[in-house]
Length: 90
Image 1 (cartoon, rainbow, N blue to C red):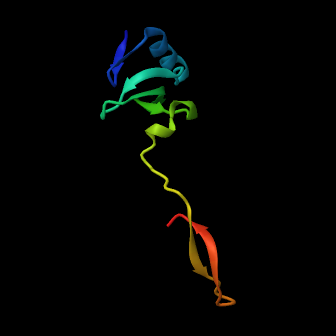
Image 2 (cartoon, one colour):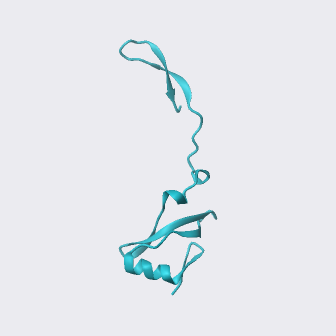
């Protein structure tokens, strides 16, 4: 009764837990389409099985959004017309 999802065999006890409670324990070592490993819970979404991710399963290295250094950039105070230094991401 094991099922393979994202190149990972889901153990029988987790399949049973999914059917009984609608959610598994955190399962490690799934493989994404890009070949990267990840951990996730499986949960029932109607008649389909979906993933639910925990904060612990995300690492800063896996984030696709790269944050650069924040730098000062000038901005204009509309009321006084003076130029001020403010922190921005631009």
